[in-house]
Length: 456
Image 1 (cartoon, one colour):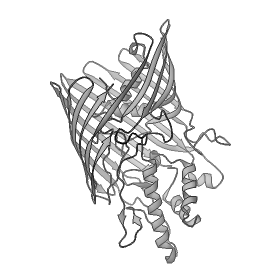
Image 2 (cartoon, one colour):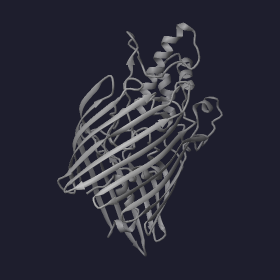
Image 3 (cartoon, rainbow, N blue to C red):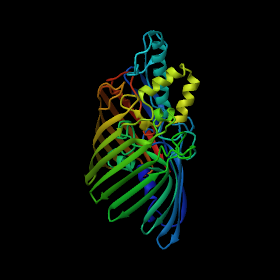
């Protein structure tokens, strides 16, 4: 019944999606058991949102006549395993430093030499803060928001649709449409090494569709959180966003290209009292698919670059030193920054820049009520910082099987592996999470998932 929710939600932008004025309650309930091995440890657990994140939503349309319609979507996530609205259950592991009780994350060391008596406290503080930082920011949804997935209203006209609010970005639409798993399971291409900004707050989008062509242009006025907020005093427009995509779909093939760009005010300029907006994460991706009957092949390439993360290794160390390691002070400063996953070096699992090229090849075969899919993804990050001293490389591959009892209910099984090389330590995650990390660089990760998805 449901395609990837991105496709479903965006379909609401066109008159054909509604034959008459209506308000619809919809959602997905997805739950299963997964076993994750992340190098030094493993976990078996019941999980919500393995295939697609569990959610409920309301969408509606009113025909205004003359080819005009008013539309809206409000959509909220939830976790079926606990009933909560939290959504941050990836695995994060740091290896204990000898007999010390302080865990040391791989690659988190000193930027500049310190007096020997200060080294243990600073290194321990860096590791603890970096790991807490990763856990706090690595979720695809907004904390504390009721409709954290989508919240927008729009007007469909004979000349295209204009939509305003919290929306999926043009680059993320391409990520989902031109890979075999869309946004589903631990096998998806949208793991941490490829993820662009997924959603934009305070965003204005223009969409048009004509004879197989689709055009999307989006500008986000910022205002996500904290100091990255055009509502700050004075306004910084430090997290404004822009993006676009163009697509063409024929009966048995399709191609598309997308671009996303976020802006950022780095911590160093904020601390100096001279906030300066710079280009943050930039992504460009090109993908396509072709099919013969029930068999389809997908391919995609993405370049993901961020030369100006809001927080650098040097900034993080300076925070530890300047606050004397006071956790409350550090938490207050980091909380005000509202660091986003796009500011992190996700292949390595710590603060810093990124420069990643990623590739996807996938295929699916439908037979009867079944769909068998296979995917191979590869990513290489060449960014350098005080902590990123080598390249980070990851090969990600596996199989997924779905059996559809009906258009609304499916059982599925997934086997996926992440082979890490050099400074990569990527783990695997479900559809609702950005990523996780192994206990050390170069350790491999595996995921086995079995679950059920029901759409309503």
